Image (tube, rainbow, N blue to C red; front, side, top):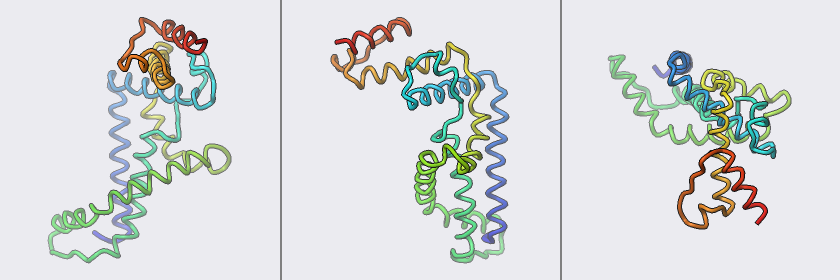
Length: 205
């Protein structure tokens, strides 16, 4: 149970289950639509980070993959857990009750205190990778996450892009002192064009 080989195999098996599940639910129409909105979100954020105007035309050209995606974090957690528990398995107190099920349950309890450490390590790794590995040969470090993002993101249509762009633009409008911030409440717009018009009026004020 605690041997490095066993921990590596079980970790890879768990990752395979997660990826297979995501690939399976992608075939459900409603989930597929959610994954399209996920792709629209990534395109919108990439457009914003590139310093370009938040328009459908600009966002349409962007990739659906993003280095700070939660999907990448999920994959990295799985990979870090494989490395961490493969190394720790032989260092933790030996468990030998004579019952394989009990041994696995007890070892699971032994690993629980390390979960926050594992999450923290993964979070910091993803920050470093997103900052320094987006170009050049180090980009290969992002590809495990990108490959799974190809499952959880789907190319959106223009209407979905408009929803994602409007969401970010409304947030920025409020953050930068727009009408909603002044009133201390929410504000709604009848259309994407109305939001853009309100932004232009605020910028000109």
